[in-house]
Image 1 (tube, rainbow, N blue to C red):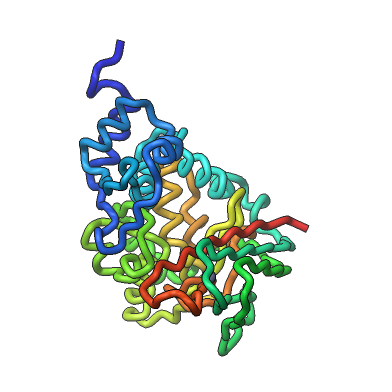
Image 2 (cartoon, helix red, strand yellow):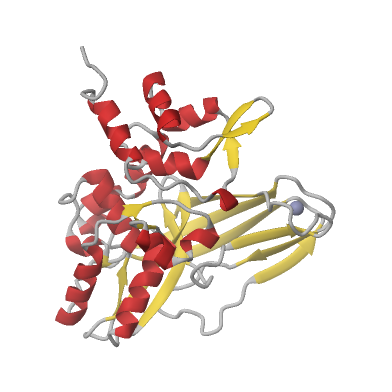
Length: 324
Ligand SMILES: [Zn+2]
């Protein structure tokens, strides 16, 4: 019979609580009730009690407590439970990194279907969308598409071709600088846009996400004289998620991709030695769809023209990708 403290499931969740940094209160979005939260974590009652007693923030609502999905995500990813919804989804999305490059260094055609829904639409709305782009010829002066209209739901269709590349970094100086940066033991998290854009705030707390990791590495490599460009786009997995990574010019003249966030995330999910070093430093999988938004910009935004300026955006964005 297991007892508290020796149960491996419980030990994993306790470890997730160590070093857990809640979403700062000013940016919190407590929307999930306890039932939805526990469904996301798929944890037994004793673990739920451990988390709520141990630092998972709860905000009171008339009919019970509410939880921020980012806090739940950030605990689940580091729990080692392997059964929480975030762990299962991300393990599927990143499983290519454990496969032979022949499976992901290919050319692929995708049909992306994006459905934007304003959940509390009031009157006319203004919409902005940064469309997918291209790897080799990023638009010199990319511009988002703007439109207005009364509808609460808009669907966008894009056809994109991606080209996976299996490559290593050639420049010894570049390789060393990047290996050094990636060796830092950072904890992959999801944070609100305003928080993750502050790379120093994130790094001081031992945290990394795709935006903070890209900004910090870009700064470091640029200071060392390397040519860099931050890239935004989407990772096509079972779910399609917005993502940010860095391209850097190598000694062979080619742009190589460095994916700081997925480097750390893959090691958390699969173990430190399960992924080839070049998978996220030099290579680029065919599931990475480049976009045109600048680093830190949301690819899709919406504002109800009739709503007060300080009202929440309530924009729901669902993207599906079909391989042609
Ligand atoms: Zn609206």
